[in-house]
Length: 152
Image (cartoon, rainbow, N blue to C red; front, side, top):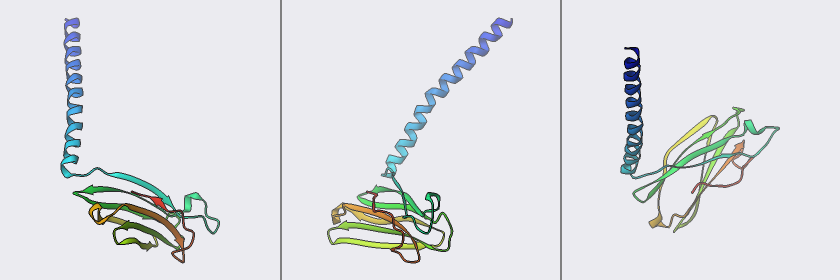
């Protein structure tokens, strides 16, 4: 009787594993289909860092990282500016982009952290073809700047 019980338990275990493996690709396909139905795929960039200053090491530099996606022809940017040393100096993030009306630059500053949610809305129809990011840290928005990084 023991051998029959062992065979039945083994068959049940094998059957449940097979069913689980068959369901995993179906769940992955459902998640991909749901994301495609929303019309976007996230494209991650960064992190970008500020320059060195005042004896700071790499772990104390300000940083920015994020992602962008295309939603029905409009490009939206998301990200987080983080001041990693909390030294009471501002952290800055610069956004630079180009479209039919020329080049544009905008910057933001914070003492701690700053989140960007759906920044932009740029369109290829308006000639949008470039988006760059730079991070700085200090009393001035020009202090200890890192290099411009391509986000798009």
